[in-house]
Image (cartoon, rainbow, N blue to C red; front, side):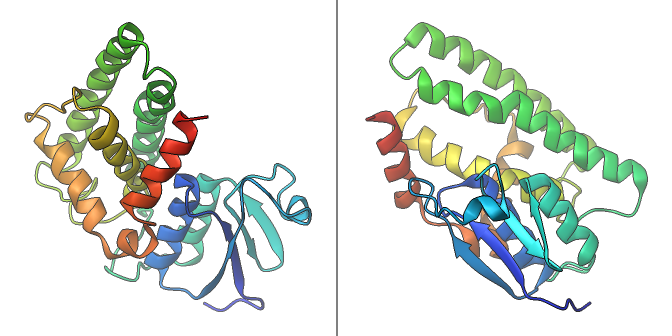
Length: 228
């Protein structure tokens, strides 16, 4: 389909939420203008785009839309056929759509939310051990949900790459960088092999690689937060 005005995506390399939107647009195979927002020194005009001053935001057909999950669903609706595979990023089947949305919500609330707690508790071993226990419980359930959808994968819906993968890939990759450098004692059990292979497949996806700022960049961003 065509639009009367070019799509503009307001983004930041460091932000996993912004990478969600970038991945969705890459999957759609559409041209768009990427506008980098300095999160430490946001331009005054950006509040006209998003009064909350957060990224990502997107301008489509002259309208400004914010919030990453809203944006990736919008992209899926505007461009239903994915670039790299002949599948919809959001399935037609209502049950499958609900399962995709549930998995995103589950991972974000039960696992993703713990990542910031880990960052804040690096010097508190007792608190960290408690968070690790919650993490493992969350990962166990995520592994089960992945197996229920497809025992072999590689993606959440099997061969079909979907918004469940788009939404979570940036967080898996960032946590892997963080774990490898700061959490040597935290090991994901090998029996969660479906989860582990899924995370690997997401990071091998072309749309992910095209939008990933690099492990060293992410590591430096973590170091700045930890050393504040």
